[in-house]
Amino acid sequence: MSKQILCLPGDGIGPEIMTEALKVLEAAKQRFGLDIEVSHGLVGGAAIDKDGVPLSDETLAVAKRSDAILFGAVGGPKWDSQPMANRPEKGLLKLRSELDLFANLRPAILFPQLAEASSLKPELVAGLDILIVRELTGGIYFGEPRGVRTLENGEREGFNTYVYRESEVRRIAKVAFEAAQKRGGRLCSVDKSNVLEVTALWRDVVIEESGSYSDVELSHMYVDNAAMQLVRAPKQFDVMVTGNMFGDILSDCAAMLTGSIGMLPSASLNEKNQGMYEPVHGSAPDIAGENKANPLAQILSLAMLLRYSLGEGDTADAIEKAVSDVLDKGYRTGDIASEGCQLMGTVEMGDAVVGCLLNS
Ligand code: NAI
Ligand code: MG
Image (tube, rainbow, N blue to C red; front, side):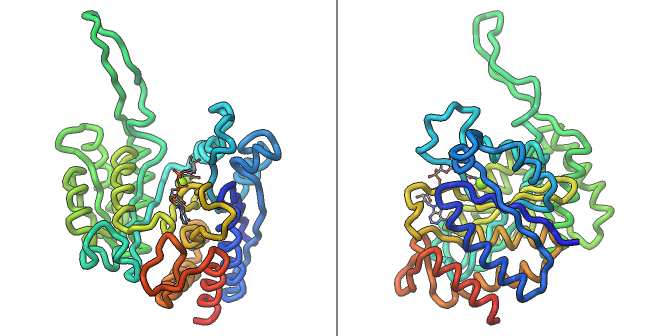
């Protein structure tokens, strides 16, 4: 049976970069003979303009039936006057919660050709390839009770609850171990088990799960040290797994090591291995419609989709290699431009990736 992908370009630069990713998918189908059916839907501002809501029930139903969703980006000043509950971003949040996308995979890959763009010295980051697996639907961001209360003496007190159930830790640990198996075979679990009971349980459960993954080398690190190590010697990491809040912070820190936001893909998975794949960046309304957007984050999101939800790791490898090949040729969009490069637009960059994919 053919695999089903739902394509949701969104608004802003979303449709432009999605067009390029779909060209790459067509080329990949041709080269590898993949049996994939693509359907198309509206989300975010594009959906508000047509249906009045950022995600229609119909589109949500198609999303639930699909093996994977390729998502572009949403949001922009045009829809700022919408009530909060009807903003473009709500379409994205609704997909995450309705599909129970609890595992957020954020690679921080620095192509050696772009080492100059990093905030660190080139020798520290050249060839950097880390995957951060962040728990996305639990932890302190969702724990109850929460709020601000007034004490008897009149002083105000804010409070949140940091809670993880064993089953929540187990399922994110599984995703991380499996990702490590598909990559370099090393997993570092990040916690604060010397201070927080909830993360001591986290560590225990990760160790229990490791019994099923004897081919993965497991290590543990406290979060403060992990932050330090990420900026000191980031290449020591392969896969990192951590809770929602620590992951939020560490993944942004790791992202900056790679320089350009136009290069970073992400995935959010559920227990059925259904996933939603999207660039880390937003809809970039400042450059929308100008053929300036870098399509590589969207194309790399497609590669992740093929690897994680469709089991097509070889095709994913080939697409990532094609992206690396265009960088080797000196082709750059504006956001990653450097001296002596060949500056090109969104469409030309997409064509170049297709060319490399079909001719390597
Ligand atoms: P942004 O990521 O859209 O843009 C930040 C800067 O990076 C801009 O100067 C933009 O031109 C540049 N940029 C982003 N992607 C690029 C690409 N592929 N190629 C070249 N340059 C690129 O973030 P910003 O400006 O804070 O937000 C714009 C809109 O996007 C807002 O409405 C925001 O809510 C929304 N947003 C949506 C996200 C999503 O759909 N997942 C994530 C983040 C923001
Ligand atoms: Mg995003």
